[in-house]
Length: 325
Ligand SMILES: Cc1cc2nc3c(=O)[nH]c(=O)nc-3n(C[C@H](O)[C@H](O)[C@H](O)COP(=O)(O)OP(=O)(O)OC[C@H]3O[C@@H](n4cnc5c(N)ncnc54)[C@H](O)[C@@H]3O)c2cc1C
Image 1 (spheres, rainbow, N blue to C red):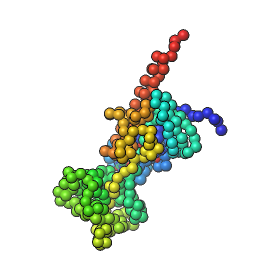
Image 2 (cartoon, rainbow, N blue to C red):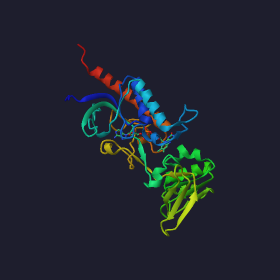
Image 3 (cartoon, rainbow, N blue to C red):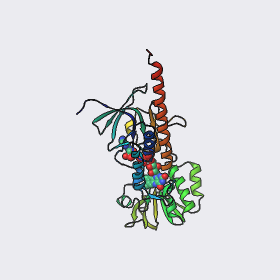
Image 4 (cartoon, rainbow, N blue to C red):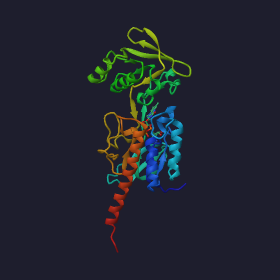
């Protein structure tokens, strides 16, 4: 085994739409990108069946197939895709010189630029019946999957701003939306609460939790439980949306990069620059607002362009500082 530490020009962490789009652009710009896929190769879209809203697929496409195609496109231009998890980073070189990373707790690598595309993980309730029907009517993304339940009865779980926004979004498309809020009040802002309570086809239930999601292959109903009285009620639904939050995958960057109070990476202005020179962030890891494949891909493109411009600017400084003999 060699003692030499591998030096990579452009390292991409994460293999969702943001990471692969960054890889396509970086490879075509000859940055020789290396990508580490993490434990979910292909990212969140591999957990869904139908993607209907990504431009360029008039008939829609299933998530895993779309991600295989993105990988093939990135590899066509020379991206090296490696299975592995980045487990630690050291971005302490304030000049932005070299960034140190550890893969799978053992391999040390160095990178001139790093594109972070580690995404975010949707939170679920954890009930076995919910897990069994993920992709069969249980979804964590109303904007992505609401359309499939047009004119039907659905339910949504959550009491925050996102849940309130998604409930009103669904109410526009669906026949009826039953909204389950665990507490006796919503966490959402007053304005969002007002939107929910003034929407006629939202049936708001406080102190109510999911007891069981019903159905074998697809969602057919929901058994709800009032956590004050213990009373149970069953309703017929075809879709259940879980809107109890997302966790950005940023634990390894704590203390290294600036984050907001919920752990999302903060980028500078309209760029993908993080607080460390040469380190860029794209996709859901820096976006709690839109969280879509196409927006993730868009910022992946931006991150690769930002990385390329950064490398050019470093080279120019080196050229100026190199004495001419
Ligand atoms: C059920 C569901 C359905 C959806 N449907 C749609 C849809 O129809 N249309 C749409 O536009 N959007 C949809 N979305 C949203 C969409 O999936 C996300 O917005 C998008 O995947 C975000 O892309 P990303 O590249 O930022 O991150 P992700 O897709 O979250 O990928 C993150 C990647 O980072 C990797 N990773 C994490 N930590 C590490 C690490 N330490 N080292 C190495 N790798 C790491 C993971 O393995 C993964 O590959 C859906 C989401 C869900 C949950």
